[in-house]
Structures are given as structure tokens and as C-alpha cells.
Image (cartoon, rainbow, N blue to C red; front, side, top):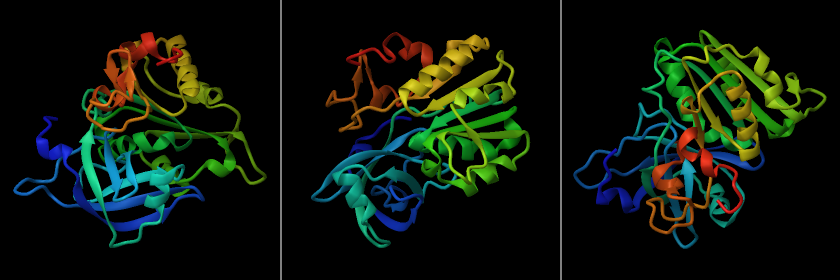
Length: 280
């Protein structure tokens, strides 16, 4: 998407809804104002916006909604610091600043007529949620859809209704695992990779989408490689300290790449030489 100067200027966005997903995770629904004389910028699943609370600060947050409705933007956020705590205190009618969308999204057009394996960990599901919604609403364009979600503890799992809805889609398999289960946990207890024998995909025509802790993504990449999936068909969303969103401040640099500008979604063969290397 071609960037314009207006893309880098904060514009007002009204809070039209807030939903508490878990004790520390919430979803903000925003209605952004269009730049003067311009339509609202379109976004692709996997991109992010910079959300600013006046007098507090700014933070990058993934867009989790489907791009078919750019007038309302959903952002799922974990409350972990000063800015996200301020965002959690917002009420409908409040206004914040919004810049974006920024970065590269998931290869959804390139993946049409291919099987999909989507593996996420923890709140890492947020950056790929928009991609799953995109595919579910255009189900006839894709092959078998495998959705695998892993969490550390059963209490960390949210969006049960959403995962149940995804599981009802045609030709779709949803697998869920927790490292530590609970007395009422109905799914697998253990690592997400222990579920991979239940996946159904053709390694010659599959797109693998990964998001979550880098250790988990590294384990999944190894499993996919062992099953014959080329590195060029594996995509991962990287997380770094993104402060400007446009590749100027350097905080999110990984070698020659800036996560905010060249990512956050990278094809694995592009990022592999520096993936999980100390200092990057």
C-alpha cells in the first residue's frame, strides 16, 4: 500500500465499544475519522495501527477486524504498561489518536487455493485473527484450514465463542492446547506441536502462518520443515519495540530489516539468518 503524508499524522478515533476478553485482555472498537478529502485508508490482515492516548503515550496494536469494514477497527490489547492501562480505562465516546495502518500483512491473496496452517500462542492470536476472519468469510477460495492455538495455562485462553464459530466452518479443523490444564479444560494438555499429527495439509501447496513467542514459532518451523514445507511457504509475525511505525527510530531493527516497515509479517527465509539470534 502506498503511503501518504496523511498516514503518518494522528487522526481522531472515537471509542464505540470495549469488550473485556479476560482479566488482562480487552478489545477496543474504534471509529476513525477520515483525513480531510480522503477515504479511510484500507488495511490488510496482519498490519497494525499506532494508538495514542493524549498526555500518556503511543503504542503499536494489531488490527484484528476484517478489512471489509474499514470504518470500524477492532484492536485486542493486553494491559501490560502505562499506555495500555490508559487504553483499558477508556469508555465509549472517548477519543484517542490513531496512525496507520503500517507494515506488511499476511499473504492471503497468494495463498488462495492452498491449504492453511495457522499456529498461534497466547495473545499472539491477535495479529492473525483478522486473517482467519478473512478466510472464514471467503471460505471457498482456500483449501483445508487448520487453526492451532496454544496457551501456557488454561486460564489464558479467551475467545472461546470465536474459536467455536471457526470450528463450524466447512473444511476447518480447530485444535487447542494448554501447557497447564484445569479441572474443566476440555482440550489437549501439552505443547501445540503434539497436535501436529492431526493436521491435514499438502506440504506442496500450503501456507503456514505463525504468531506468538519466538521459541514456540521456532519449534513449529522445525516441525513444518520436517514435514517437507519449504521455508518460502512459512510466514511469521515478529514483535519488537516499535515506537515510530515508519522505520525511522531504529528501535525495532533486526539486521537490515525494520519490523514496523518491512514486517511485522516476514517470510521465514527472509528473516531466518537472524531469527532467534542474540542481539537481534
